[in-house]
Image (cartoon, rainbow, N blue to C red; front, top):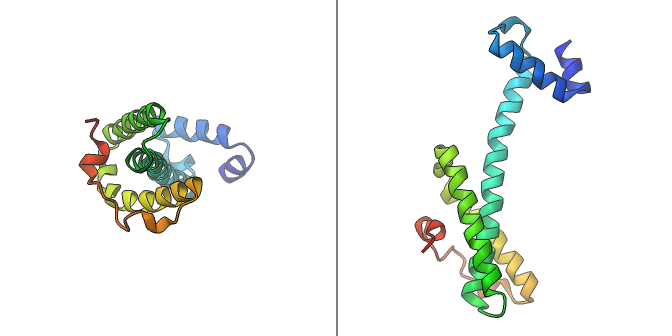
Length: 140
């Protein structure tokens, strides 16, 4: 029954499962799908962190290499992304453990995006991120 609800009305399934959990009625829980959804929620937080890091690094690269007319916009985007990343890290401190790998991937994507947008060779950028985790997240 719960599998049918999961497949046909996800929202209703979530409400039902939350009610069962709150009432501690273990027998009615859809454990397989609950485990899958909880795992997906964690992966979603990692994806969001990576996405925000990519946007942050794109603007840091632009600011570093292309100080032109959009500096104010880039600084604003940097500030916004740092704030959102800090909030995510405050809400889920264990995400700090994935920061080095997330930055590695985000930096590669940011270099690719900036190179494509500015029609320059990706080789213009260092192979490894030139900033430490602390520098990337530091407002100053």
